[in-house]
Length: 111
Image 1 (tube, rainbow, N blue to C red):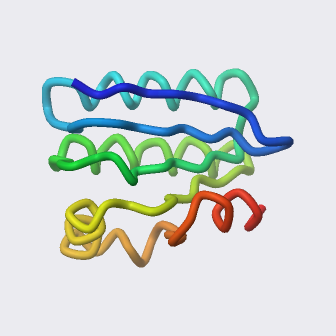
Image 2 (image 1 turned 90 degrees about the vertical axis):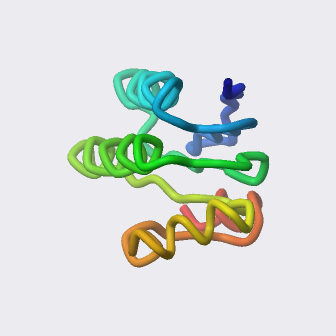
């Protein structure tokens, strides 16, 4: 199970995720992110520092969210992915699609 915490930092919405993202709960993450976009929050930072596992279902939700937010003239950045998640992003080639930052502060400041 994953815990999702959402907070605002001026024009940026920070989404912090704790736990595992797998086929059982990836849609929970997707729904939370989609709700932010529907509410007009189109500058997203996804903090994955406390995610110890992400399956292909989780990666699919990230890509779908990026497509939706870009369609709304926004963007989604990833902050401090755990080493395991960074490896999965790199293996899937998604490190070339997402802007990935070493710290939450750098990701928020990049907008």
